Length: 247
Image 1 (cartoon, rainbow, N blue to C red):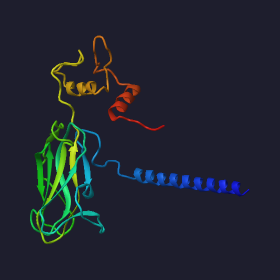
Image 2: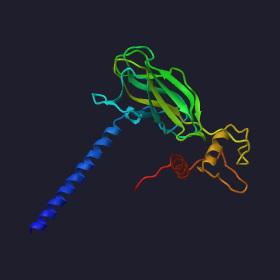
Image 3: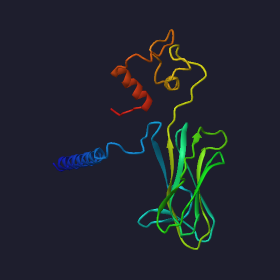
Image 4: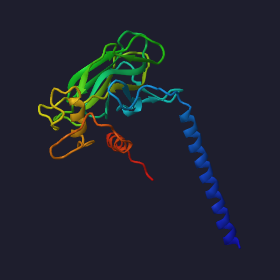
């Protein structure tokens, strides 16, 4: 009987844990559905930006602050560099970089630089402020990220804090980028979508990525003016988005 009670009690605890977990998930999903119908940035699209955030504690360094905002703390009177890598897809355009920092009020007391294969891509300097402020370059960079053969990883952020007797902090950095469509090839894949077709670049991108093989193999045709069924749309979207759901 004691063993039976113990098993029953354990089962009861497991059920309660499962219910709590389910309720927690339900609360998360419920709060998620309350978000505005249109938020930025979007993860997909050629016009909407994506923000990749890198925590200050992801940068190499020894000291950090455990106040209200966990941040990287720079040593006094030492020119200090902190480095972190950036993981974003190839073929995107990087337009902005920024870092959330608190300096001692001296202009350009901290700086953020982005490198690819050791080559400087862009840099931004902080403005005088006595609280955490996000400093970001005002004009688009327009850097097409295609990777490189020399260094790995390819993209590196460098935060430099100039010597100062006062404490300086930075919470983290941001890389703001947008997806692009592959440039059009020189030759056409489909007989009915020649190189001068207004949708040539986009149809070729679908074919090159394996999202579509066209409507006919021999001769190779895409049928650009044919109606799209819901079934074909499911294939297009699933392949394009890489949908994988654990059923």
